[in-house]
Amino acid sequence: MPPVLHSPVLEALGRRITGGELSAGAVLTLDGIGAEFEVSRTVAREAMRLLEALGLVRSGPRVGIVVLPHDAWNVLDPRVIEWRLAGPGRASQLRSLTELRQAVEPLAAACAARGASAAVRDELVATARRLRELGEAGHGDGEEFLALDIRLHELLMRSSGNELFSALADVVAVVISGRTHLGLMPAHPEPEALDAHEAVALAVARGDGAAAEEAMARIVREVRGALG
Amino acid sequence: MPPVLHSPVLEALGRRITGGELSAGAVLTLDGIGAEFEVSRTVAREAMRLLEALGLVRSGPRVGIVVLPHDAWNVLDPRVIEWRLAGPGRASQLRSLTELRQAVEPLAAACAARGASAAVRDELVATARRLRELGEAGHGDGEEFLALDIRLHELLMRSSGNELFSALADVVAVVISGRTHLGLMPAHPEPEALDAHEAVALAVARGDGAAAEEAMARIVREVRGALG
DNA sequence: ACGCGTTAATGGTGTCACCAATGGGTGAGG
DNA sequence: CCTCACCCATTGGTGACACCATTAACGCGT
Image: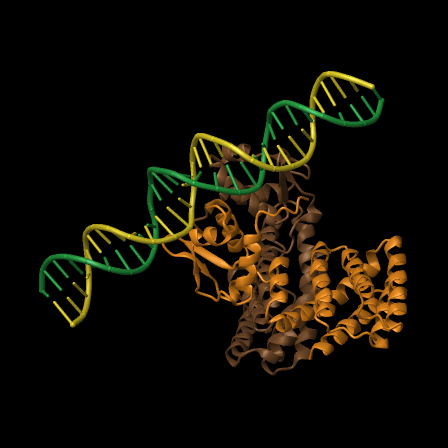
């Protein structure tokens, strides 16, 4: 709760490495980190341990802390994802993530059609309806549209009954958020996109897994198309 | 590798929490950990930080280290997955993971059909062929069959051209391995399963993404059916 | 000049003692 | 019985220290 995070160090170093500012093979030392961020060795060590757990660095005696090549990174960790989305290469990262969405979200929607609670079904159709209103009014790039879009996808993932899909809800949220904050979202969304969102909600509401899966596939395909 | 891990503490605590031995709300203290594992407070703190990064615990002054409910866990982290597969609830975990495979692997196979190198295509068909031989000879539950099965799926994921799918290759490997080591693998695999594996390999070899996706979907559907 | 064993410097690993901050439990007072 | 202020257990963070693996430099012999 106290956002007083003991590790702005981790944040800075993580972004620096994932952003390519520190490329593979670069070497850091605890003293260097401590000096730059004006922290003690202990907290530098803790930040380093976290970085190590994320697969970004590896440390050894006499060697210091060496930055690992990107194929050793824990690319599925939310922190790494966010850092990479904030740095250069965000386009490529966005493509990879969208491909993952393409794989997961349709199935998640199908599962949600089987397992969602009544309250969730209601909120889904209400959200989709409001989404259509905002989209047709030309606010497809606004904050409220964004929040509702995220909410709808999050509801679907979390209601899938699969904790792994639930965990990916955060990732999807970051991706959606990233898309509009990078200015890739049109003020007037494609009508078929709005149709598809409503179709997913309605399909889940009536428990039609196949239809939900198909409609969600349409959504993600459209998103993917928009990225090239 | 420096598997010379300074933190058997993390292993032990992680398994204890994910296994339910320490349920949500349980409280630990650094001194307690230090005393039990005979380590200093510093290393106990580092282990705790890692646990915290995995979403297993939360720590605060005067509060100690409280175990978080399972829906706060970082269920997509390989370590958490492995711990949970080793403890009770492995059946449920296996179901969730298989559902994830069902979502990801078909698309990954389709991508691999577009992006795999010539060497990979060759190895894929060779592996599938050997797999059939072993399966028909009644060694479907043997170690060599397992290794080849893992190798085939790993090749597909890693050749997908998507680093996120690559990262999931480890997970898939653990799942496949878990299935046979838990005795859920028949000595004589279903002929259609062998057919499907060969079909995937051949489809990828000739660059037919749609066929690869369909065949892989058949494989995973069969696996899922075997779990109930 | 080259190869190889020995030695020294480097920098992480782990421990300890210490102080600051915090927030939940406790008990006094209304 | 409820409120609220205080206390202190426990984490957060610092600095100094010993230890030791690894690397690089050195020196010796050929």
